Amino acid sequence: MSLGLNDADVLHNPGIPAVEPWATLFIDAVHDKRYGDAIWSRYHIFGDVVDGKFEKLTVLETIKDDAMRYKEFEPEAYGEAVAFYKDTMNSADTHPEVIEIILQIGEQDFSVVHIPEGI
Image (cartoon, rainbow, N blue to C red; front, side, top):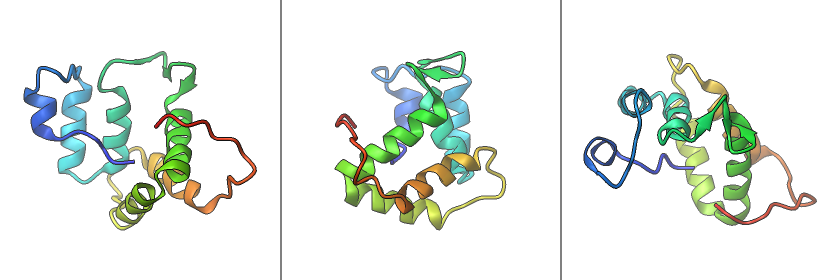
């Protein structure tokens, strides 16, 4: 559950079609260590969110779904993300629920839930 982008790519890589205001919001959030806001912006940065939905799910549902997939199929990367986000909570973050969702997934048992691949 890494951010998957860096400032230089967002600002200067023509192959990354980042849209405003999300590109600026993403960069500001990363610089301020507001990772809930950064992840929230990251899900919006390509303009794929319409009426609060990314495909058929809300952004929060998509984040939860992605976190479940990472936990199941990329457990090492998921564990690193959990350790990082747990130690970097920021009271200025306006989307703390994003980090809470990622951390809560780590506490849940999905052994009886079918999680399709596709990270």
